[in-house]
Image 1 (spheres, helix red, strand yellow):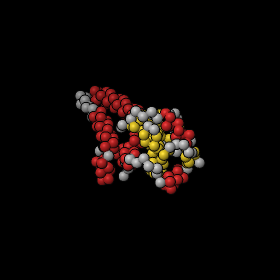
Image 2: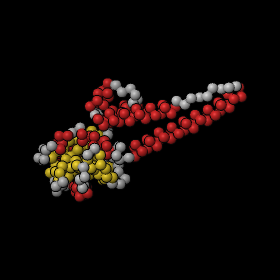
Image 3: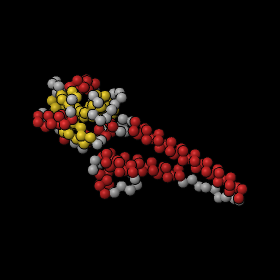
Image 4: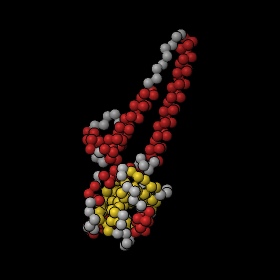
Length: 225
């Protein structure tokens, strides 16, 4: 089970995560934290709903109290729905909490990708690029890792390029649109997500790495077919 599948299961019912999802949370710190946040959010909603209703004192008072209670419940329900909508928009719209975090967590599942500086197998690299529908112009640098990875429901090329600033991870995201370049710092990495071709390209290096020149070189090297 990957992180995306786990989060779909956890989002449906965070209080009852069983089987493979529970095992995944035990092995993945990021998903375990995500589950804790979901459960805490559920508890806050439950606490908000546990509002005591005053006992009725008579027929006329009961009618008035009923009307007041109904209005209070409607206001409470509206505030909860509004809070959920705002929270969902913030969650989906924030690069830190969505795409950027997913990229860094994906890298965590392939730590060996950064351990070698030797050129990747030429046949493997060509196959990865062909499957993604892209080509690399000369001059980018040594590609030391190339793999076709499942990411957010699509197969994408996961490359590591050796640069003067150290190894840099490049993921070409044909199905992830970016309206404008986004910089992020996440879990000890610095990265940028930039619009490119029909989608975007993510370039990720060590914390504090100046990625401006590297990102420009990557954009110039990638040819979309």
